[in-house]
Length: 403
Length: 145
Image 1 (cartoon, rainbow over the protein chains, first blue to last red):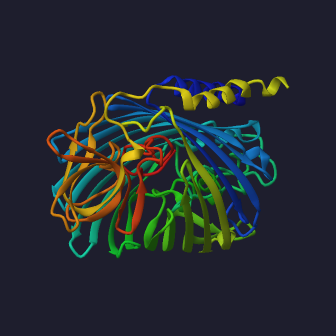
Image 2 (image 1 turned 60 degrees about the vertical axis):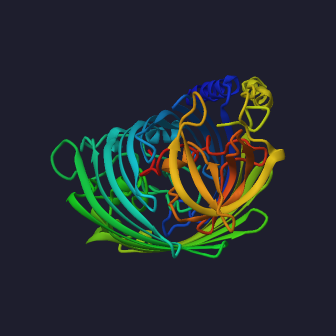
Image 3 (image 1 turned 90 degrees about the vertical axis):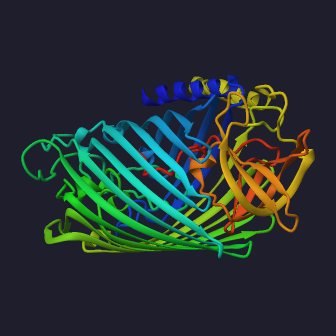
């Protein structure tokens, strides 16, 4: 059923793409391999092939964009899914040095019957303003609201986040940047256990295998999920929210024409509420909490080196240390009993990416390694992740165009 | 066999893509006029460049060792997508055109700054800022659904 619908979406996007003058169509293929799909101490190796087709058409100052993708899981076939999004954005100049940006987007991910509980539809609205305070200094204000509705409505949420950012470039080729963010996520969780058929053994979740790979860290979760049964209601009925404030600073330095260095630090505080799921199984299965910017209190340090080499070769390497506590989420022993401590993860992430651009397409190879030490022993793990792929822009004009 | 039938129009559409659309008259990326440029960014403006298109991020670059200025046309998306500052040293590759009054404009294909290379168009001159999950003109996102 869902597959049938997705075929129609793919066809529609392609037909719109080829009939539109001046449109750009991008075909992307990523091949992933990991030794630990669910990011737990029970390693499950997996390979994922992710295809996507993106379309973009400028209509005056409006831009229409659409993307369809399919991720095929080779070992855990039931997790294979289609994803699609469609949206419009609009750039509004405010003088020569400033502009507003607005976007509206709808998105969905569709799983087969086995994992239909995780199929989701949602939408987001984005507004931003950017201005040059001086030629060497930029200020940016940004807001984004988001809604997601899952087939299993336990996980439905509303969220919004606002960001203020200021930077300054110095003649020494140094850039300093400071950000401040406030965010709030409200789960429309009904807080009523819903009887549902358990998922098959090893059942799992699910957030996007089609990512670009750099700096992602997005995870897989929910291996222990049991289909919505057995979660522990926190209190009463109705939803629950969690709010945070964060500040971050970044320093970047160019060295010659080849080397780019950057270091950044971030501190985040949970200022209201806590994660609504007392049991990690519940919360873990939607996005992996370590990849959910709303879920944690703690700090993160990152260092990166970029090498811009001849023959259109680029190498990026990075290291991130993070210490995150997930308020409201209890650590549990391997026997399933609560340990009486809030979950805390200390993570070391190493990433490297090699990219080569050719005349018609670009290819890349990326590797990341994560060491995760958690107060919940299930999440003590260490593993590598390999990804390779290509991106090909399909021309929709006979000559190099203007836009 | 029947299950695969839906693939036929998809493959046909993909095959048709390179021939679809027409070239807009006038200003376009001419691969025969490619030049390399290098200098210091002196001015950054967002200005309309083409009728019916979103305004472009445009850099006025003082060329190294020449004291001459050249206008470098970047893309619409970059105003939010990347942060270029006045005083930054940049170099790159682009298609050069000269106006009747002698002003020189380069449509950038590749821009290097801060030790990174950013590809704006492919080697045939087709924009690569559009399309793809990262190709939108907007700011970096807080995260996906």
